Length: 151
Image (cartoon, rainbow, N blue to C red; front, side):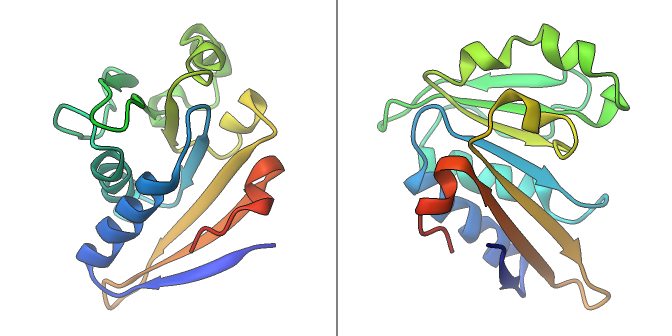
């Protein structure tokens, strides 16, 4: 069942990601969807902060995927930007992300329509930016995510 969360400020978007990062487990897959400027990278930065991974988190648009070493929680983060793939899923397959899904948390920006094939167990987060610059996140849990309290 989908859940909607209001995110009035950028800090709220970051904090939402941080809380999510504090609860994720190795093997979790999170797909981020929404238009440019909706807050996908901000959520990814929050997840990284909640995980406590090492390295600066930015949109990996030109390299497609970036792995951040595990911090205190012992869980690495693989941050993927599928925007440049333009529907060509062979490059996504070449990243071998199903292997990463054993030990790491995988977050895929622009992942809707591509990332679902990696695992039935995933959380889809659709972000929308409103004219007043606030954001709303719609969470759609799938598989083992349906039994977890997220928001």
